[in-house]
Amino acid sequence: MGSRYIFGICLVILGVIFFLDQLGVWSFGWIISTWWPLIILIIGISHLASSNKSFFTGIVIIAIGILLQADQLDYLPGGFWGSFWPMILILIGVWILTVKHQRSKRHPSTAEDVNMLALFSGVNQIISSDNFKGGTIGAYFGGAELDLRNAKMSPEGASLELTAAFGGIEIRIPYDWKVFVTGTPIFGGMENKTRQEFPEGEVLPILKINYLASFGGIEIKN
Image (tube, rainbow, N blue to C red; front, side):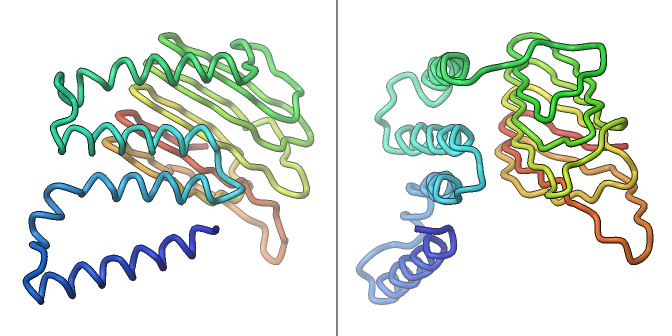
């Protein structure tokens, strides 16, 4: 099921709720104040339903939504934050066990893809590949820096999946790279500070960036 269908289903459900509120069956205000974390769950499920987005990022969004909803229903004796930190440790452990990560590299690398993890530390990598295709970057309580200014993108384009949770990610790209950014900020943010310069009439490949910024920040610049 694609994200378009999930969005359509959500509209139908919302319409039914409004209708029942008008009939006096439910109190819409009570539903919103109690069940608002379901919106985060829906975002996470939609993320998983999209084949071109990170599975791990979708799981993180869903896990946060579940904890917030459980807290609203008083199922968490220690509250949201009491359960949040164990969840973070579990997700970080799963990330480490299931994904291959590259060590920090200060010297230029000719790799066509990147897979970086900043876990309670900082990583820095420079890519000078002539056929860059993308990859994944995760920053958890740490910082990750990726320099692509000397790289050339694959003719088919490139795709980067970014996750910043209590951490930060900084990416530098050439002026002649087109960038398309989508993502989800959850108590976090993303800034696109690039100044892109394109030759007239020339069709260029696109760097697609999808991100999750949860209590973290992401910055893209030249």
